Image (cartoon, helix red, strand yellow):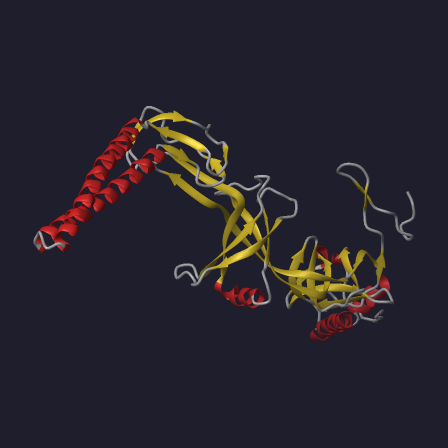
Length: 399
């Protein structure tokens, strides 16, 4: 747009108010014209912006919660002796994989063996006394029926026989106790698991039910404890009602997919201090990939969202009114589409606001404006380590 004016030259120092007003009017008219025709001028005077596009796709995607968890042994046993004495032998190595019932420690059995023999001798003695008392009571019964002795003499003989029989039963129980104590001298693993470092060496004297000997942990399967915020509790419970929820667990340093497990526990109360609730997953660990006490990344899968629309993360832009993407229409012009973001799925993200099949701009957005022309170019091609090559466009030609 051109403006032609004829202005008389004024002598220095003789600028008039009318001349100044005319100049301001020209500036105002020019500015108003620029604001009105900015987009038209850009569309007509600038070349189309070169952009890289990708298609929005529809897929079934999981809805999940990502949390930090900690692994815990499914079973943990601290061995303590059930009888006191001196440790005579050690039958395992620290860190060994143990079988259930495997012999681990031997306590000096000699005192308990002697106690067993003493109890057996006492039983033999008391049995003989009981047999004699029983025979005497039977004789007294016959004499009593013949009315040759008083009822008091007969009752005394009968009570003596019954007391002797009770003594025999007590001796038998003492023998069982002595045998059990002798068995306790051989300390065995109560579970399948991995031994820790021994806490007592041979030669030490241990106290019954007091001295810790060894810690054993079962590593397969392994528990993973984690928490979710109470605001997510309703979604967790709702989806648990439909069936067992799946978890994916991996170490923070791993880039591979997490190992699948089942959600097996939901606590019965929200923690007052944190507003979180405790959950537990159970996962296979036969390869010892996880170790008790490790921090892990836990993904709790709640449900599968059908036909969700995904776009590359690179397509998401942030404006004053929120997130948006540029969509390339059929006439190669750009349209701004506000979107609501969902969960990330690798290098893509779930969005509401575009349709599957729409072409969204993933590179070159800086020169794009709504309604402006764009020229779609191929994405950069990786050629060798650390270098990329851009395919030349038709307009750019070849150098």
